[in-house]
Image 1 (tube, rainbow, N blue to C red):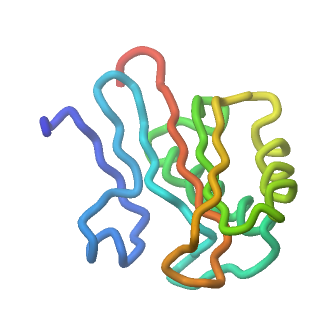
Image 2: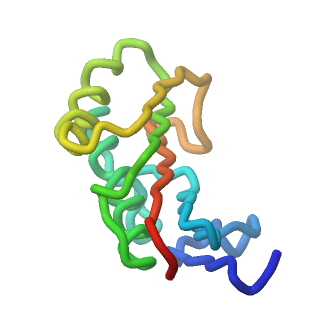
Length: 132
């Protein structure tokens, strides 16, 4: 990739271990945020699916902040959950965070995550109009 691609790190140990960036900003203004869970400083912030969703989105917002954009610039979200019973709680968190933004969104049920206490993972895509 060219030098015009900007990569940011959250400092999570898995980024170095597995070779990825928390977020990547393309020259077109598109910002892709890797899957985020409610892990802060290497510790899972346990809680309800609602609380995990809010925490995971906060990790994504922190990554967006590093490139100088925010929640209002989000154009797409993906929510991965481990149980259909959590749809309403995770959906409630999404609505509270994005009701005024209305990004394209998907919610997908998966078989599990690397730690069984995690029940939600989110991905975010944002767009910065104009040039950096």
